[in-house]
Length: 61
Image 1 (cartoon, rainbow, N blue to C red):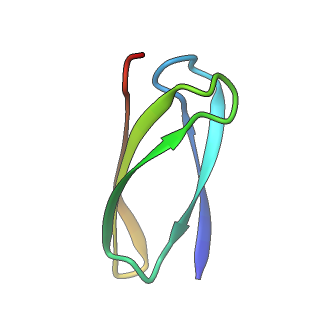
Image 2 (cartoon, rainbow, N blue to C red):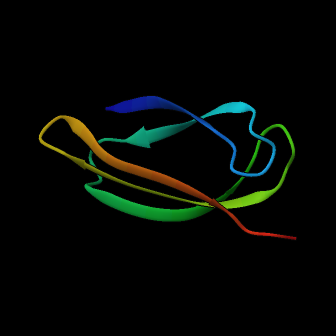
């Protein structure tokens, strides 16, 4: 199953979303903001049907 998670871009502060594959318990990857195109590190932990943690960190350019 895939869920959509909304959060604020750490660079432009606009609300954006990412899709999280719930079959993966933990992941960290780089993705560009859909508004300002700034790259950011996104990480999450998903266990027992809940998004336990989520973080996004701007990669300054």
